[in-house]
Length: 452
Image (cartoon, rainbow, N blue to C red; front, side, top):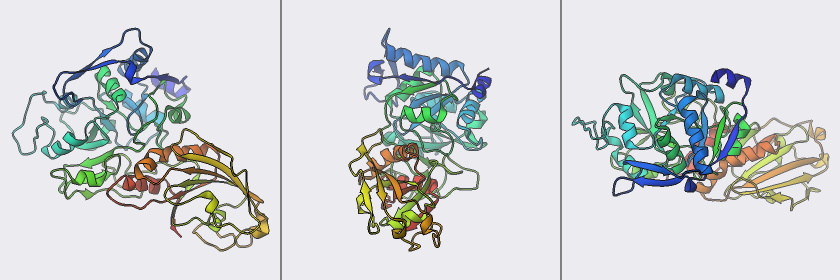
């Protein structure tokens, strides 16, 4: 019934939930950690709590997924143990079924139950750690980064309680405990492990607001929980501690350098590629094109010239600029007789950063023909240009964490502006911060990467 409804289209509700108003979080252990035993005392006759319970009921009874916020991006959640519910995720996203999903849990006790052990059990084998059946290699990571933007790979139990489509036919599965209290409350109240990829249409930029989810999935799902914008802005880091040496399969919200500070992870290997992989993926984001807006994305190392911009436009067009460290739209090296129209036409938007619109107007004869960049040559075609080019510019600042938080929103904002091509200023790729994750996402989204 639900799948028929999904095919025919559904009215998508957006329900606001303020986690500070749903009730009290009660911790049963002295350290008041979500890793241990905890509960929620929901407020009675409370609008936010009732909205959350509506989402809980749908997760428990329906095969249609629910979109909800985490600290990284919005997720599209469904009961990870029911095949019909997991199929609803793939149908809504139009995602290939061999791309594995990450399971989200609300406590270590829930993970132990998923693995088939009791909360107090301990295996004396070398692979068993202080967290029951969870391999000891993960102890230091769990203690430092959970709840948080880190996913770990675990052996699939036999028999497995997870729906086969969650793992993409792999013998392992990825799992994480989000730090968002709203996400934790949803999972806890549902009493279910939730399979939850990003709540976007497959290959599109990941959503960091409820509006992004609605734009992509309106009519495909019933319910979106609006808990405000996500604080991290890029997906979780995925690590594999089952190999020697352990490996990072996807860079994300926890940096490589932070992981290398943890016991047993000092010599962690890089197990991901910045390009699309054709082999069976070991983790989400390793296969297929990802994070792409409708506009073409050009990743640029160095300064942006007007000649480079015009090489990617064959007619009157709209250009998007995402600046980070040094670019300013008014610093474009422009030909003579060029005028910036409406230089003060600007607006603040949902994007983290400053969004500005303006136009450059110049005579066609003044358009450069220097062949710079690796776009199509414009030899003999200069006079076909219209006399104006419109720009939309988003400045994300010069700190990697802020760039990460605003990147996907910036790409979506520029898409909504109807730009034809987006030029993104590359950031210096170092292993000590979020730069590796930002550049990984940009390379997967970009059509071309060039140096000037």
